Image 1 (cartoon, helix red, strand yellow):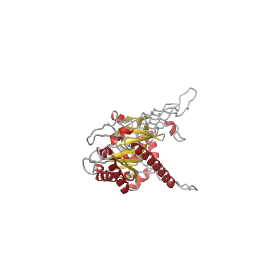
Image 2 (image 1 turned 45 degrees about the horizontal axis):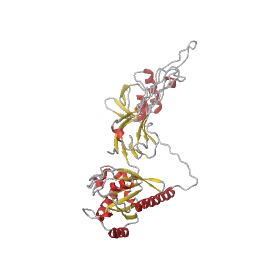
Image 3 (image 1 turned 90 degrees about the vertical axis):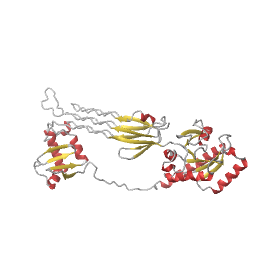
Image 4 (image 1 turned 45 degrees about the vertical axis):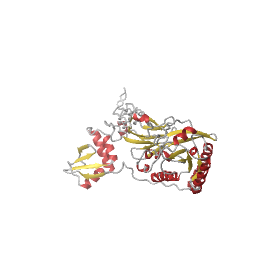
Length: 434
């Protein structure tokens, strides 16, 4: 079974705590603070591994946590960074991250950080100043990023074999490559995509057998809608049309599959196509030649070739290989021309930098009822989460930072009075801004 979807929980390591420490040596009566910083938490990293076939390994373990950063120590010794947690995934994996951004891993060795570790806390040495010579407080480390992310696999294949159920795709793949897909004389034999490779002109070309499409596949009918995404990676489609289908007619079957590609979107209907009239051994040779001529006459510009083939007898397979090689070469040349056209012209480019307030710099002050005020803002909340509110020196430091940032002035403008309570995140406390 091909596992092409996975949902996993990732958690970056928590940062290590800073330490409160003072230098203690003989004959050094005023050693001063020397607490080191905590180490940053480790990251959860997805790494593209060409040795992986699908996402089945992620079904056994769905929780991935990175290591915590080590705490700081005295003598200005900083804690070590936490260990990263590496998760290996196959090429073609699409990552829907914690912030719903999309990342694709295509080449072996590519990496993507999906959960960053929390920052380590500063030791008391960082807070020493001319007016605060012996700080007896330090920062806590922050939690790392965490949450559920989704992974989806889109197979990396040069050629996609498409067509109605029982059109002969699996038989063709088995004949042209060393793949061994299940072959039977009933529809929907193929329940998952299968890959095979052929050698053409000293290069390897990967073929993907996409399970049969039926009318309504793009809206969830049948099996095809589950695997249409795998066609997105292909550079060429080989559309198998059964030359003498037991139900319907070849033209209607062809148009039904083309309509599903268009309904799915993602540009699938614009991919170059080879029309292969399959099971040609069921009609006389002269009839198959007539059909090829008829289909070629009414085919559009997107059809690179029309051929009659038979996986049972091998008829037309050499012509199909040559047509695949020629169509892929033409597709590569077209892609190169498009890339050159999109490339910016050489010349002087002025560099502009736009500076905007970061998400951690802003804050809001709002009444919370009954003499209470709530301060919101990621930067403010992180500031409070770093400190021990039961430590008087830490509270004094927080008050000075709030004054520098402008929070206290904003509270006073909003109507804050002495004795009112302030809420920041889960913290609730009183202070006298005067």
